[in-house]
Length: 132
Image (cartoon, rainbow, N blue to C red; front, side, top):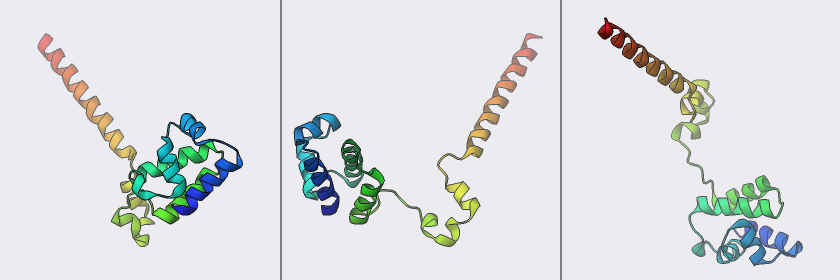
């Protein structure tokens, strides 16, 4: 986390921006900004939150956010959960596995719509029979 913090601190100092200005603009506490810049993990929250702070802070300083997050991931490891299937290269290349692992599976939404439509039709037909 030292390299990420140094990059943020050097960019802030180069732009002559105070810690208070960063805190006000990003809504990140001054203590957290100092801990980020120093790479002091004991004073920082969980890794996923740190990642968000790095993204916000880098964006405020107009740094290349993706490059800095890459550096952060190299230093800290990924904050994304990986399933066993995704970590196995031979299976993760399979389109069927990718489809099954996708968070927004269009098949699930389609089935949901069909089931709702069937329920509406059954209710409509039942009400027609009761009226006769």
